[in-house]
Amino acid sequence: MRIYVDNAATTKISDEVAKEMISCIKEIPGNPSSIYAEGREAKKAVETAREKVAKAIGASPREIYFTGSGTEADNWAIRSTAKAYADKGKHIITTAVEHHAVLHTCQDLEKQGWEVTYLPVDKYGRVAAEDVERAIRPDTVLVSVMFANNEIGTIMPIREIGAICRERKVIFHTDAVQAVGMIEIDVNELNIDMLSLTAHKFHGPKGVGALYVRQGVKLTPFITGGAQERGKRAATENVPGIVGLGKAIELATADIHGKQKQLTELRDYYIKQVLDKVPYAWLNGHPSERLPGNTNISFRFIEGEGMLLRLDMKGISASSGSACTSGSLDPSHVLLAIGLKHEDAHGSLRVTFDTSNTKEQADAIADALAEIVPLLRSMSPLYEDFVKNNKED
Ligand SMILES: *Cc1c(COP(=O)(O)O)cnc(C)c1O
Image (cartoon, rainbow, N blue to C red; front, side, top):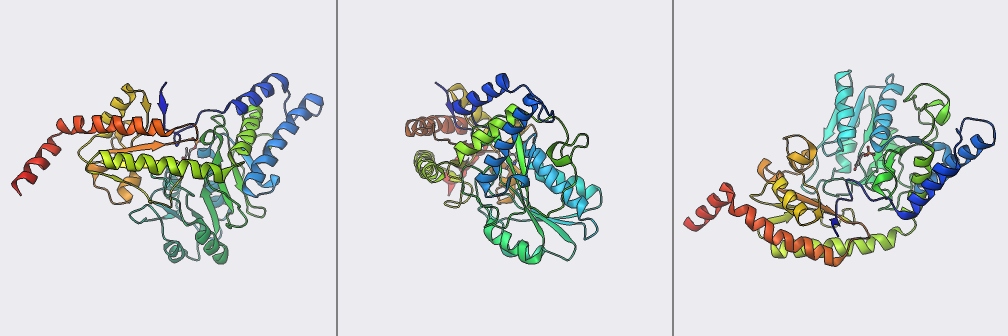
């Protein structure tokens, strides 16, 4: 049995969700836009899912728009707000540690004449709410700060930022892809105006997400065509995907406290095991203000991909903040933003648990690392130099 601990990348679809999707595929063949019985049934399935998504974040169903992914929701939120409020100004505030779905969208807008402030973060990866406040200008139209970071798990001060944005009358978008189903979210209590989520991060299907848009916030169409999604996102709905999203978010938000407790215990147990067994290693991200299932540990003198390959051979699927996994040679922008040196940013390992993972699995990973890390270090010229220099001291 393999050990899957890359739940921040994607999660396995739950049996209950799969079952509901299969029955939808087989039994609900209609197009939601058709007025006859099959169409009405498909429409009903979509609207039931919309109610479930809305309920999970304290929104109203008419504030939920289905999308093809979390990436699309991020793109839509940012591009729509930029365009719809261009007469007010062309300044956007975000952070240096956002997902590329946000960062690359902001960079694209910069090329088209918008100005973007990328706020720095502290050594734990947290942006300061006061920095957000200071960065707001009369021409600022949007603040986009992720709820929790996908690499290092750090939770942002969303409540404080929401309050500031509300007071300064600036639209607040949050990429909550990693937070939904892990942290309780009420968009009204937190003063969130727009929120992105995606089903496959909480045991739903891949390729379906949603954007929450507060009533009264201007939204421009993302895909033009038919009248689906109130004319804002044309295309025949992904009915089975949407049904799966609805079921998955209902399950994911049913017992958040129980899940938090279980995962936090497992997470902290694993971190302690690894740091006890492997020298020259440290935890990235905030020690307590972090996602319950997230760990990100750096090992000095190590290349992340070497570690991943050897873990894979031992049946362990994890992720690293390093080159090969992201398909580029640059080290993680998140690890650089929290102040890691380039060489250290290459040697990190992200292990993200879900509730099916066990203490025995955490032990197995820690034991594997206790074997793999010294082996890789024994082949590293950096480590050799380090040992030599330490002896001379
Ligand atoms: C996974 C992820 C996304 C992208 O979602 P997709 O549905 O895979 O496009 C965006 N933001 C964060 C923080 C993520 O973890």
